[in-house]
Length: 397
Image (tube, rainbow, N blue to C red; front, side, top):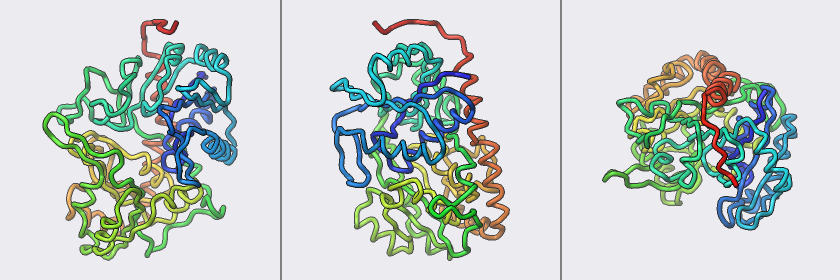
């Protein structure tokens, strides 16, 4: 088994949706028997968010407390370390101990490219996992350290193919997908420990979304946007179906919320849904399924991106009706996952799921196990990252 340093964004921003992005890697690697260290750095001043107080500071302790509670809930015991890059202060281990851990690690797995310290170079085998295809490649993320890795993976499963317009920057991006630990979604409803049952017929299709995230961007004379543009294209969808549709939104103005409510969408506070893992899991599990668009840039570039949130719905046995980013090129669709590109196709997908709902729930679980389970995703990723021959270059003083 390997000694793996995982870098992510759990301490700085410990809201449930973001936390699960990285926690599935940490929990999955540990359950596979690997020796895991979780390491995060501050990135910038006032970067630590307290979801209870809804305020930012330089204090990582609220994030530490949340992560320790989550790991205790799932029986996980691994070192958790944090470094303030400006002050040099460390939590969870001394600087000297951290350097020894990095030096002795078989692999540094930087998920999302939101962490970078020069000391990472002490680990001679470093891998980047791109969560935001197109935005990473044009320099929105991982700008300072993009050349510091020997292996690159991306949730953009189509990057490098002729019909995908995400620039490669001369890098060979290996396709990968968000891992999920299905058993933590299937055994119980997180809030009340009751067995999972099929969703009520009047339950809404839901999704949890940041309305405009970090904003759109102009590149090579064209504009590439976020989810807001794509949701607006489907504004009057509720007028074409009797199926309740609910958006748990963060960052949407009161005017936008009113506009969607007027058209028949149910609107909920995304922050309240994501405040802790139990609330988040219960919300997904009690949904009839997921209905969601993707960031405009993912769709426009035919990136093949698939959501780390959607894999949680699937693992919970909830079908997902999703705007196609090109993932239908590599993922079987039509049962459990249905892809749409227009309002008319979205209506048709909703009707197809409701006509044979239990079959779609079963198909969703099967897709989670076959394509997204940590038992499938992580061994494949590690085999590539750990066995590829790379030159050993010690670039840290």
